[in-house]
Image 1: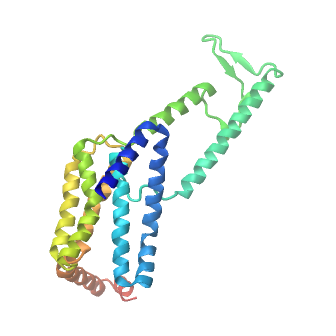
Image 2: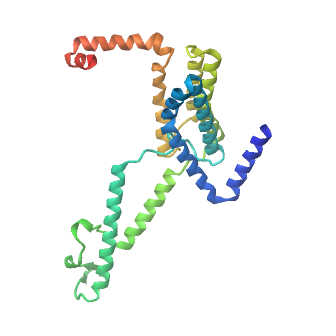
Image 3: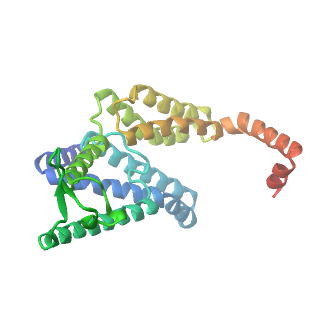
Length: 283
């Protein structure tokens, strides 16, 4: 079994190194992980309904093993940097509509400029030269509509767009992680498996799974170090993981023994002293 896994790992690495086009495999892995994460709850509920509680836990373990293996491939083989969860962000339809509108507007502007260039030969006196500088200026009668004006020379405008596009690609490209950061990401990826294993060994109500999971998360963040040289998406992911540490206050057994009573006491105080809050809490 170990020989089979090792040979498969070597073949995958050879495929990545020999064929540059296999970067598509990274996109496919990310898409599969995203779909799996969105469908995870549905699969868990279906397994609990048809295969009882044991089947649900078997499915949970299988899903987390699959996710961990694929994420490790992204980190160690594809060098995809710090992986967000889910790997592909949700579709922002408003931004997509705005992008499509800007694209259509740019096409209309280009078509107008092309038509203007073809018609400029037949239009006499559409431009004039400044007396002192000798700069060629287009008259207002030959200018595009107000909503299409960029106030820049078309050629320079295109160069600026290309520069902005290249700079955005450079900014948002995955950061090449150091060895320490790669191990930190590995710790974070394998944390769910360690948590499930500790729950199996010590029980769901034990403090050991809670402490182990929290310790791995904190260790991973500490090993990441300063996030100054990460791209914006990776910085956002590290901040998200830091904020997610607060969720340990609402996880058993800490929640059952400490947080629950304090939260209920605070809610009761709000309900007694603020009428509107009391009505909302009693609904």
